[in-house]
Each structure stands twice: as C-alpha cells, then as structure tokens.
Length: 257
Image (cartoon, rainbow, N blue to C red; front, side, top):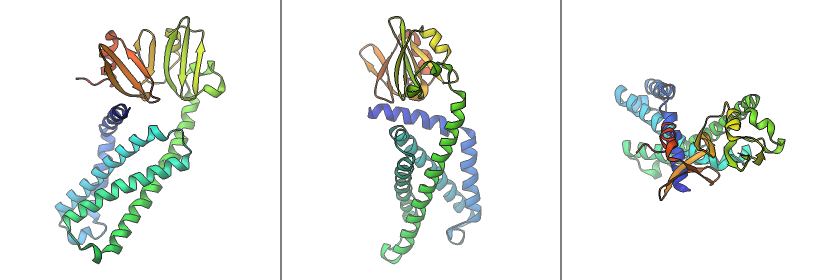
C-alpha cells in the first residue's frame, strides 16, 4: 500500500501545484516578503538575493507542507479534528523547521552555542504557526463539508442513514449493485448503469463492466500478470478492463507510461 499512497499523493500534488492560482499566490507572497525583508533579511541581504531567498523559501515550504498534508490526510480522515490538526501541525512544523534551519545554516553559518536562543525562537514560531494553520484548514474543511452535504449524490438517498458516507465504489453482484461508502456497504436492487447515473456530482469513472470508482478514493495502481488493478484508499482493489485503460489514464487514475 505504500506505493499506492505514494501514487495517490503524487497525483494530487501535481493537480494542486499545477493550478495557476496556487502559483500566483506563492510567487506573490514570496515577492512581498522579499521586498519587506522580515527577520532582519532586509539588513543582511541585497535586494535581488533577498527576493530569490524568500521566493525560494515560500515555494519550498509550500511544497513540503503540501506533501506532508496530502500524505497524512487519507490516514487521518476518521480521527477527531483535534487529533488531525495536532498531528498535521506537528509534522508540518518538524518538516519545515528542518528545511528552513538547514537553508539558513548554509547561507549564514553560525556557532550554535552563541545563537541557541534565536534558533529555538525561530523553531517555536514555525511550529506554532503550523499548528494554527493546520487547525484553520481543518475548521474550513468542516464548513466546506457542510456545504457539500447539501449537494449529495441521489444514490445516497437509497442507503440507510448510517451508511451515507462519501461514495467509494460500485460493483455488480448478480442482479444487485453493491454501493460502498466510507461508512459501509449496501446491496441495492439496481442496475449498475442506473446507479452510476445517480452518482453525480461525485467525480468517478466506470473502469470495468462490473465496477465504478470514485476518483478521489483511488490511491494507486498495480499490475497482476495481464490484469490492471486500482488500489483504493481503504486497501481494496478494483480491476480495470483493457477497454477502459485509456479512459482511466486520461482521468489520471493510471500512469501514462
């Protein structure tokens, strides 16, 4: 499953960092910090090197933060908010601290004993900031989820209330369709084609004549002889028929090579 989660994280990271809005914001924040020169960088660095330093720091720490967050999110989604926010914040704090302190040491070699207080203050500031950011994002995520709940796929109305979670996959079993969500499974006397029509607005793809998957819950893929299998975030696997491999690649569920 490690490879599956790695592929899932890489796919999400490419989509996120490929968004021009993210690139504009990261560049804008880096330029503003470079111009203002906080943390005494305005006093010890010339203008162009200072711009390059801050743009590089912002872009690199954003990349590190995105990798850590996307890697942890699937594993923490069933835990309480305080636990998700705390663990994510600590992981971000440690990763970003290591990077920033290393870069600063390479640029301005120091004697640790002489500036231990400053290093500790910087480390603590980064950690607290990461904890605050992770908590804010978790709270914003709850608000977004509340808005999403007002636009649920009609298929969920057919399920018992206790099983109305996010759609994961649909599979044919005799004359029934097994509906799998993050809260359980249910057999419905319904054709797969009819069930798929009721999955909107969830982004998904029919990958086999007997299987449909929600794109968000595909963690990776593997080959088993001549068979191609998608690995879902819950660890289960779904086959991809040869006829559906091009569409799965186009949707980003399979590598293109």
